[in-house]
Every structure is written in structure tokens, then in C-alpha cells.
Amino acid sequence: MVELNNLTTPKGSRKRKKRVGRGPGSGLGTYSGRGVKGENSRSGGGVSPGFEGGQTPFIKRIPKKGFNRKKSQGYSVVNIRELNRFKKGAEVTIEKLREEGLVKGKGPVKILGDGEIDFKLTVHAHKFSKVAREKIEGAGGKAIENV
Image 1 (tube, rainbow, N blue to C red):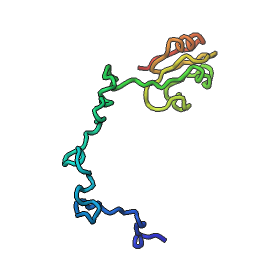
Image 2 (spheres, rainbow, N blue to C red; image 1 turned 60 degrees about the vertical axis):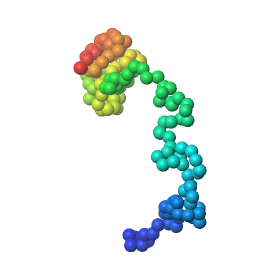
Image 3 (tube, rainbow, N blue to C red; image 1 turned 30 degrees about the vertical axis):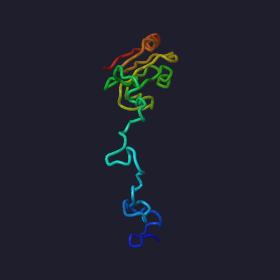
């Protein structure tokens, strides 16, 4: 059984440090594994991150145009066909949509017009598409915007 007092590391799991510049017998004497000449053989040598050998770097090749709004409005969308699960004449609030699992998260809710509805409903949401509003009011219901 393994306990704290008899823990050991497996053989080969710990690698010894490379001791460079300790004579030719070490295998890393003379040039210390850096080669003879060139940028990487010098102290402080090497290329900066993003350097692509003289080719125009990727960051300079991509277009830098326009901007993204910091706080974009991400709506949770619900289609009209999904409102058929509620009872006739019911008042559908955002909380009820969350309880039913139609809306996840805390963001604003938008009702879209995909599908049909044949009965009267009072629907509360942050936003309605034009088609959704027409279908809800056409069935005798109300579309109420909560800002």
C-alpha cells in the first residue's frame, strides 16, 4: 500500500540538469551545444516571438479594420412554435420560459416568428420580431415588451 512514508519517484521520471561548458568529456564542452556561429550561438541571440524568417508576419498580414462592440447584445431566442407547450390564455413571462428550459442564462430574450400558434397567449419578452408579434396578435394574444 502506498503511504506518505514510502512514496518514491519512478526511475527515469526526474531528468538531470544539462551541465554545459564543463569540458569535452561531458559531451557539451567547447560550444556548449549551441553550434559554431549564427544568431542563436551568441548571448542574447534568438528571434522574437512572431518572427517568421523575414516573411511578413501573420499579425501584419491580417486586416485591422472596424471594431467589435465591447458589450454586444446576445439575445436568447425562442421561436413561436415552442410557445405551444403553454396552456390556452396563459401569461408567458421570462421566468416561465426559464422554468420550461426554453431560455438559459440571464441575458435578454427575443421571440422569433418560426412556427405557428393557434390560441391566445400573453407573452412578455425583451424583444419581438415583426413576424412573431403579428402571429401572437393575430391569434388574439398580446406581445408585451419588457425593457
